[in-house]
Amino acid sequence: MTEIVSSLPETPASDAAAAQPAQADGARRRNRRGGRGRAAAAKGAAPQSAAASARPVREIHPVLLQLAQLYPALFGDSPKPLKRGIFQDLQVAQGEALDKDGLKQALALHTRSTRYLNVVATGAARCDLQGVEVEAMAPEHVLHALIEVFRRKKPRDGEDLQAKLQRRIGQAFIDSGLGRDAYLEKVQLREPSALAKVEAALAVVAEQDAKAEAVLRAFEGSGAETVDAFADMYGMNTQQVQRQLHRARQLKAQA
Image 1: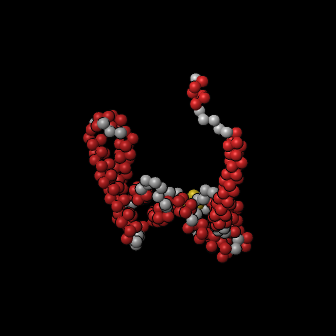
Image 2 (image 1 turned 135 degrees about the horizontal axis):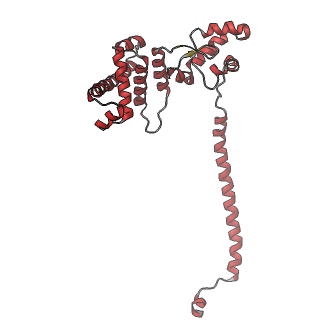
Image 3 (image 1 turned 90 degrees about the horizontal axis):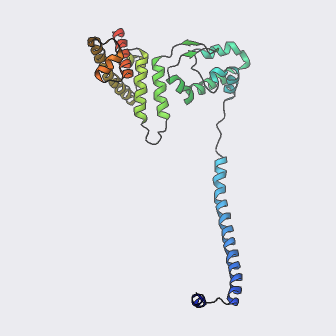
């Protein structure tokens, strides 16, 4: 062990002493370089921060702020579809408290907003100033809102917006209670791409309806006393069978 230790080269005291100032000088140079780098980074980041802070903040129309205070159930965070003629109702209810031209502008902005169109696209009923449902949403308004909402959407990773839109259109068609031709006549689509989307959705619904009607015929001829028994008999999902039977009976009533 003594031989191994003694064989290691010794560091002269003068070298160690000389190394300390050199290390200190190196540290100071590194600090100066680091300081310059941080200053440059801060300088480069400053325009970005300034640009971010300079982004315009969307201002809310002052009359919309008034409406949200007066009728929070209609114009608040969770808006409701407005009955047709709401402009005249507001004029009667509020008189000169609401500027006429400002009210027109505010209602136009509100009813074209994405959050309002999202509500219309659900098919929710139109409401009066008291928030009472007074008018069913027309099928064409539901469809036009749907198409516009999805036109504005930005797809997330792996999200198929067209497939979602097709399903929503199909459900809107079913909820309308109309037949194919009556629905197309009602919605009056002039844009070829929009019409193609609707026709594709209706074709999928027609295929599903044919299956539903076949299930109803099979159920009625099976002798099964319950839907559960019928589903077990054919190895089918009970809830799906119930939906198909409901749809088939709906179609039968419409015929």
